[in-house]
Length: 163
Image (cartoon, rainbow, N blue to C red; front, side):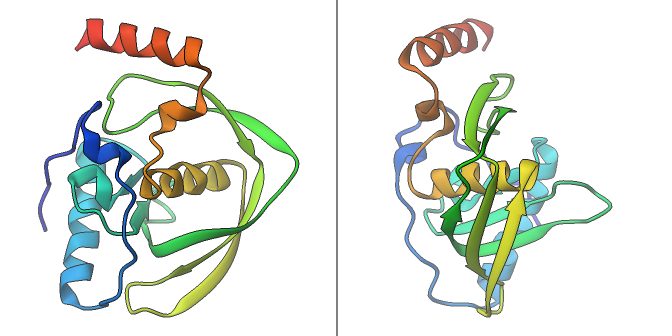
């Protein structure tokens, strides 16, 4: 497979909503494995096709090497817990920039696998945070939008100085 170029903030592609995958074939599997290689090289724990300029609803997560990678096609959140948690987030599109984001602690979501089969899954804590973060990206919502304007502006200024 191949390591692809990652869009860097503030590329307008990072605000582009992605279209659903409708064809489940070898090219989707190849894209998924390119994403995995790209994410590992970045490095990161999650990536979407949008991060490499392919605006289709595909997510790769690898929360630990022991568990291995998971591929999520057309993921959508079905339910969110009222209980929230704060977690430090960042992006492969903005290396070195992180801040705390508050999100629901648990979610229920639906996705398809690389063959097109549907699955429902519950996630909590770090897994739930990562899925929400990546689904936001598929919807064209870069993680900075989850910060207050003051925190976002400060983070962007610091990141631009450090580039």
